[in-house]
Length: 427
Image 1: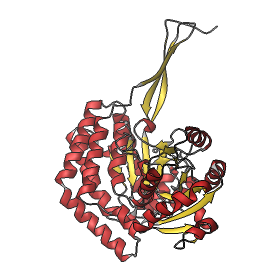
Image 2 (image 1 turned 120 degrees about the horizontal axis):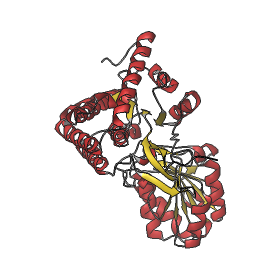
Image 3 (image 1 turned 60 degrees about the vertical axis):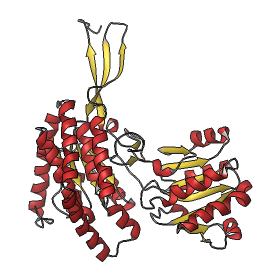
Image 4 (image 1 turned 90 degrees about the vertical axis):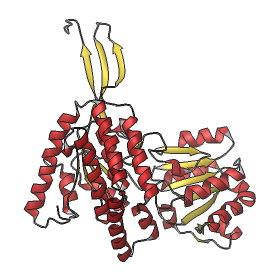
């Protein structure tokens, strides 16, 4: 299919057809054996391995277009595929394949005084629409996780990763065919027309049960304002690291350098550093020096600039910015309470970390910060479904309804109640 379907009527018809086919596939997947789903994912992993050259060629096309469009280095890093990243995609598919099948799992079971036996059992959500931007690996992650949880999925990747995502999708379809599953279980929108997103947000005539957006603030805001179906919100990763007065210097230096600079464009990258005033003299310079050595720009408050001449002034906007680049804002706080207040005021409720040896400080941080993921003495770049043992993720849900944190197979299920009786009637 072509990258553009210009006629409005044709686009609507195409999207509605995707929805009908997905709904039909979902009805089959809801009763598909775990063995078939596992086989499909293993076969998809083999197909990606066998089609490395095609995928990398497609990715080169996307990268060239992005470079010509003046995209940033961080954006290009998110878009890039190489053999190592393909290895990661293959590994994620294999991991998801071997995860326990959540469908049919008994979440809870109890008996009532009248003899009724009640069970709460996991069921698929149905049809999931996933709208994402530049990361082509999301094609594999989302397809695999939805399939494992018994859901059909309609994928709409960004125009920047159009060719890469289609090449990966073709391998997922090979896996489905190999296992005798409907090819429509994992579909990809065949156009870069932004109007296709609007059709998905309308629900495709009731075909889509939930939308999962994965991307920047603009995308998520549009989805939340226009969607007529439930949304698993994935907001920006405005991630904070707080260095407590009890922090070990060596841990602070290594963790913060990794949290900011390992990959600056991912949603788990640290964007703001808060440091307790009592350790400014001992900890600030070594931490900042380690960041600068790796090419990070420092934007600091007055207290930071007094000690670090290289720091640029931090503005109010800096405390609200997800840089997705080698930039970090740094602020000196008087105590843990001020750090918590700052985080609660500016955070996107994605991921926050505390570097501390004081157990009481850690517990206070964990109890009072309301973000999806909280870290202690560990890099925020571990905020990832694969690192949590989920095999992958569709995104990090920052809302509080249904799913929160990394969205893996369990989060892609709902449940139903099974009530067994022996002839009971209600008086």
